[in-house]
Length: 166
Image 1 (cartoon, one colour):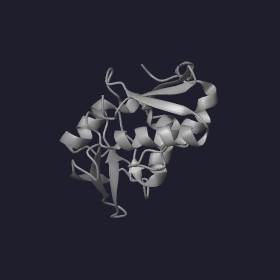
Image 2 (cartoon, rainbow, N blue to C red):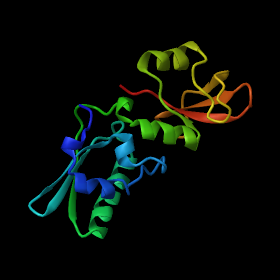
Image 3 (cartoon, one colour):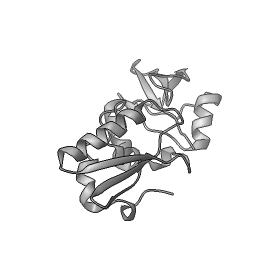
């Protein structure tokens, strides 16, 4: 289920866009696709979010940030976690993918290409500095569990790659 505007009260979108992912501050929670729904019910905003992966420590911070953002706008808010269906990198918006790249994190490839890159050594991940695909995996584990560390063999710069999660 991909989030569409039908699941989010349109007047809540500007407030939700104030809440960033604490691990990747250039992405809003809407760009990340973690917001399943946001509605006003009985004078309370109810926001349902899905963690990017089970046990993600950022979800507690995101939940608190949502409550604070709505409180600052005069709303009482409640945050609920929705675990199924599981979040997928397909839910990252195009704007979010562009923001990732601009921030120095290569956006996720599709599931097949992701496996070819992480397990097969294929050169498909584009360097966020120079744009070359002459890149190599340095470590399957980057600064967070959802990222891998790459290095460009042309400009010699390291960069993170956001792993595909399905």
